[in-house]
Image (cartoon, rainbow, N blue to C red; front, top):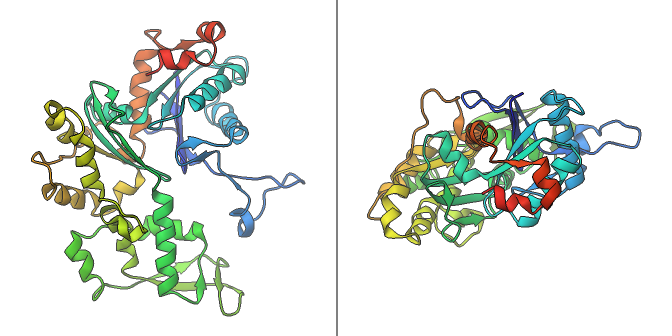
Length: 374
C-alpha cells in the first residue's frame, strides 16, 4: 500500500496515495458543518454561523474536528481498513509550533495506529515539486502568506517571513467593495468567495490599475436562487443580478499594494527581495532565480505577469525569476505543489526507513518528530 500524503490547509485539504505525477485523489473543504442534535446538518442559510474550522491561518486549532476530518479522509476517502493502517506524510506550514507537530504525531500513532509517520515543511516540498532543492517559495494561502528561502533542502527560518493575511482577507476586501457598488444587496461570504474565484484578475501594473477608476467594463453576475437578500425589504429574492467592475482588480492589486487592505507594508515582490537580502549574498542569485509561486490565488489571470513585471522593477540587482513546473506534472500544480512534493519525498523516506516508526514513538514519545522530521 502506498503511503498517504496529507496537506491540510485552512480552506482545502489535499490527500491521496503518494503518486507524484498525479493530482491528489481527494481535494475537499477543510471547513465542516456542525451537526444538529437530531443528527442532521443545518441548512445553508445558517451554515456560516455553525461552521467548524479545524485549521485556522495554516495551523490546527480544533483537534477534535481535525480527528473527525482525518477519520473521514483516511477510512472513507482513501479506503484504509481499521487494524491495517499504513504510513502517512504530512506537510508542515512555515514556522509550525513544536507543540502542534507533537500533537499531530501523537494523534496519528495513538488514535489512528499508523505504522509510520513523516512531516516536512511546505516550502521544501513545493520546491521538490518543480525539481529544485534550493530556491524561494511565495505561498499565498487562504489564511496566510509565507515567503521562505530554502538552501539545499533546508528552510532559512531567520530570513523567512509569514504574514497573517491570505485569501480570506482578499475575500473580505471584495465583499466590502461589492457592498459599495451594490448597496441594496446583502451577499453571503460563500457567494463572494465564488465571485472572487470566477472574476478576480491582476492589472498589468499600478498605472493600469489606476486607469480602472475611470474606465472599467462592468459585468453582470446572477447570484444563486434564494441566496440574495435586499437590505431594503430583508426578503429573499428568487434571482438577483449584481454588477462587478473595478472590484475584480482589487484582489490582485492588494498583494502589490497592501494599503488596499489597510496595511502599511511593502508589496509581495519587495517582501521577497527583502527576505532574501538577509541571507548570505553568495546565495542571492540561486534563491531569486528559483522563485516558486504557490497557492490558488497565484493562478488568477495576470498575476504571474504582474509579478514578473514588478520583479523587473525591484530594488534587487538580481531580478527574481519564476520556475516553471515540468510538463509531466499535473495541471494547476500551484494549487497543490506541497502535496506533490510530499508524494515525491514519501517515495524516499519510507522505503529508506528515515521516518518515525511505531517503535520510535513508543520509545521516545511525541518529541521524536523533531529529531527525525526536518
